[in-house]
Image: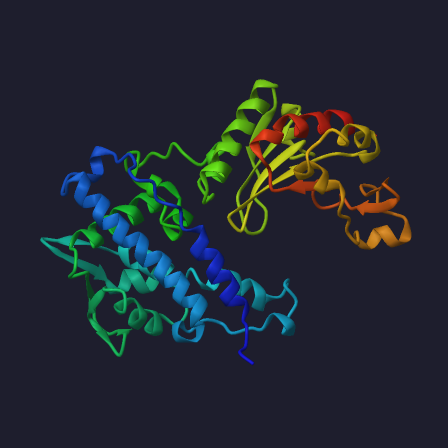
Length: 358
C-alpha cells in the first residue's frame, strides 16, 4: 500500500492557494519600463504555470524534492513534524525569492551575490531544489553538484528572457512591501501599484482573492456590502490555513479582538461563513421557512471540547430539532458555519438577529 504523507496534502493546498489568474489585470507603469504589457502577461502566465506545476509535482512525488516524509498516523497534527510539513512545499519558491532579492541584472545577465544569498537563505536541501528548478526551465551557473561554489550565481530562463525579469519585479515588490506570502502564491496584484505601494489585501478581497469561483467572490463582496451598510466594523482575521475577514457590531469589540458576529474564511481555498448564534432555540421557528442550504447548519453536531463532559463549557449549546438533540461547541469559533450562498444572505442576517443573545 502506497504511503500517504502530510506534505502531499499541504502541497495540494499550496497549489490551490496560487491565486487564480483573470484574463487581464492592472499593471503599474513602473513594471513596464523594459517590456510591453503583452510581454509581461505572457511571462506571468508562464510563471503561474511553473508555480502550479511545482506544487502539484511535490504533492505527487515529495521525496524527489527532498520534502519531509511524515505519515499523519504517526504524529499529532500539533507536532513540529506536522508544522514542518505545512510549510515545506513553499521551499522551492522561498529559495527562488532569496536568489532574486540577492541579485540584479548586469546588462542582460541576472547575477546573484552568493555571499548575500547564503546569509539570508534558511531553506533546507537547496542542492536538491536547485536541481529540481532546472526541470522547469531555470538554468544556473556557479554551482557545483547543485551547491553554491563561487562568488556569483548566474540564473537564466532561456525559453523567455522576460520570465526572470518579471520574477525579479515580483520579488522586489514583495520584499519592499513585506508581502512575501504574495510571492509564494504568485499574486498578480503585486504588479498593480508602484514598487512601494499595496492597495489590496486590507478588505474583503483578502478572502475573495483566494477563491476559485465567481460565485464565491460574488458572495463575499455582496455580504461585505450588506454588513457595512448595517454599520458593522470589520478587520482581517486569519486562522490556520486561510485568511479571513470578521465583522463586529462595535469598534471597541473589534479593537480588542472580541467576539465577531460574522466571519468569512478561506479554509484551504474553500469559502466558509461562521455565524455567532448563541441561542439556537430562538432560531428554530424561523428555520422552518429557510432553504435546506441554511437548515443544514443546524442538523449537525460535534463532540464538543473537554469542558463539555464535565459541564464546564460556557460557550456550547444544546438544542432539539424533530426529536434529535444536537450539541454545538463554541469555545474556539462561532458554532454555526456553512459554505454560503448569496441568495441566503437575508437568512444569515435574520438568524444572527434572533439567536445572538441568550
